[in-house]
Image (cartoon, rainbow, N blue to C red):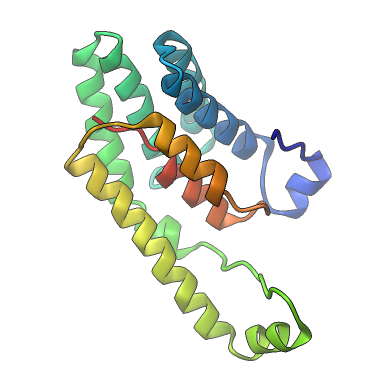
Length: 185
């Protein structure tokens, strides 16, 4: 199901159109790879990389994922030479993503009752610490996959993304997209 966000909603959430465009291109690249359309995956990954290079700072894990995904599609379409250099750059971006992750804002997500909302408000530090643990796990998983690649399963990555993608536009969603939609060799 496609999501449709207005510019006002993006800005209110602290997102830019580039944030959403990158996510859409990344998802399209993985979807096309899952379908076996490597030319389409390469084109979408290339568009995602252009957005990431133009709009994201060094250390942003989405830049690392864009580099890795484009490298993977290059290798899958026979361009091993270019893929190696891009993959090394992707590893460097993910390795330097600590400050970007540390600057993330923990979402306010009290779930079902006034009690839970009050608990989150009173114990905000505990909630933030738990989010930081989750973010660290996601980042470590991605770094590990880049360092010790295994079999790439684009369909599984796409399925995981569709099931776990946060409904709200927040920093967690940016990191999750970068970690879950990462294609590696």
